Length: 177
Figure 1 (cartoon, rainbow, N blue to C red):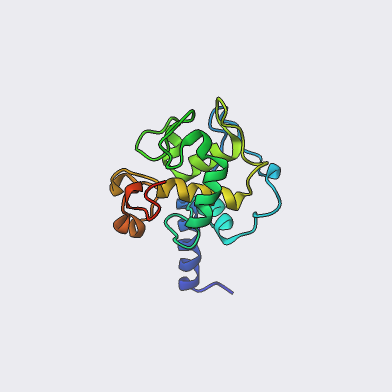
Figure 2: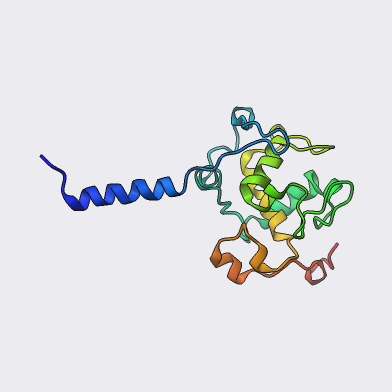
């Protein structure tokens, strides 16, 4: 029995769509070697955000107001000592503008690869300190701190880019502290 033409067309369209958007590939930022996710903590692997990110490279936490307080807290405890409270940079590079020490970090797959695998200097791998889900939350906070123009926020979906407001610590209720 031959499959119907509509069924065949649906299968072909689905296969074509999946081929057009292959799963992201994750490589060490400096060495270029594939990252080993077996090193990641077991906790935090099976969240919707992690599963979506591993399949698409899209961080669903970006500009999600429900996770930003936790994301800010994680960033403050794990990253702000080197990168500053607002990603302005200290002994580590700034993370809140258009300049990226590692250009791959302009996109979420690149930033995640840097967090997971580390880079140079004091930026060691975070796979033993943060869960995969926490890394996505930290990334969301870094993206929230962005002070540049919305059209250069390449990590945002078009919907989120349309409503994005660049970060301004002076408008925070805590006075930017």
